[in-house]
Length: 266
Image (cartoon, one colour):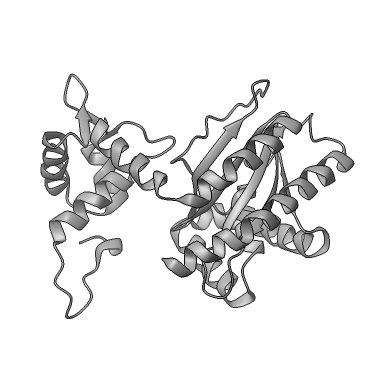
């Protein structure tokens, strides 16, 4: 069983189901098509096991095999489940008009995200009609915490103990990425304490800049993040970045109460 599917003592679990879900989790931005050997490497499961799981998921419509059968991609069934889950997330709907406003004002894309292991998962996304972005980020995409503006804002919104734990997990998951971006991430945390927002300029992707603000929900709550990503030229002026930060901070204030209520209800 992979690390993410360890069975707690005294709790009856269906191991095969958990393993199947681990397989599905491998498909994200940059991993739209995967072979069984790729999935085996990502999950730590034996390749024969992965092959049986993939064929089972294919039978259920959750995966679709390429014509030669060597690789798989997500099927309609998994997309339907994903959108059904998003439909229940009231916060994403509440954030939509706010994200539209920010994205339009700063000629980019604006998003709501939350943590998923050592990545940030996009829950809502809006791109301005005139936005020219070199990265195809959409609802359901994941980006690493360590080098993304959304990840840096997430870290900035944690208390010291929770941040240290999150950084430890990022280091364990990808030591090279952690080493390369640790200083930048910690600098962003200090920037947040001073300005109330973080910036990520040409780090996650050359030519793109991100301004982001954490959306905390109280002690023990799930921290969310609001961000605006635009071509670096559009955010080159520090005053414009400051305006974007203020716009996101204003959006956070409008969403904070709803986010806390949803976490408490969950």
